[in-house]
Length: 350
Image 1 (cartoon, rainbow, N blue to C red):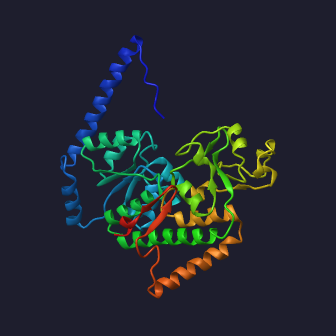
Image 2: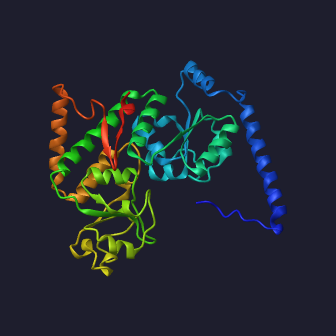
Image 3: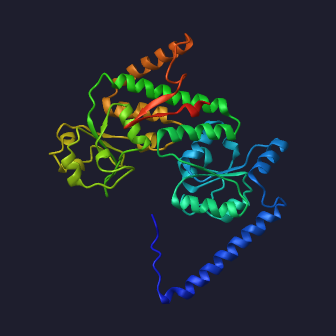
């Protein structure tokens, strides 16, 4: 969230001192870059040098979703530095050098690791960091991960960058096969009106035009959060009561569906009919390489354990059809329906 940048005459001197310190810090990092003897090289030259020396790319990731994709492609050793959240969330990276938080990475720490690429997700703060790193001669790649097709594109891009296109293609195919399977099975079932709660206090929910909204649609849940706003808007209990969801999916960390929190509002149909489902956010809240597992978990949360056997049968049928040469969504145009439109992910399997 944007910081309060209001100033007064009393803050002029501290502001000037801070500005000088920033310039000195930037100069120190620039000297460190130049000390490598490489100068401010162009991206193409950096890539050529990497190929010529036949060594793995040195990557610094500033987002756990990107870190997870790199790991899933079998390129974990390429990650020479990660953000604090990646190191905490992904056990494989617990011992990697940490370069700070998602919103306040240490630029000096990043520069000292001599990365060939710095990976980050698009956002106001992150793009500011990207510009500062590029001024220091580092190559930065920016990714978007709000929508499902963007996550698939990220897998494809990182597969190409790491020369692991086959592994990336397999991961994309697994996600799209699962999406097709859960959508086919869910189409035969009721679509409960649903609110997915990201946090209880204050109340934040899954809104429209996000990958979680798209997954809810795929598994046969009608996401009422779309009525409120895009993204992950803040709501109110009064709004939730008025929305009258038939199903409440509670992703609040460390919360329990049986702790009595929701029982205070018995007029909500989901509460009255005991349709409050606790969902492990760790299973579905990372827009990374395991969206197939996330889709399965979400389908079970919406429809119950009984749907899993049907999903497995649908997946088996898809594999049989692929083996017989029949056209599948994952083998042809790789198109999937998104809320309100049909978006192509053809580029994800080029």
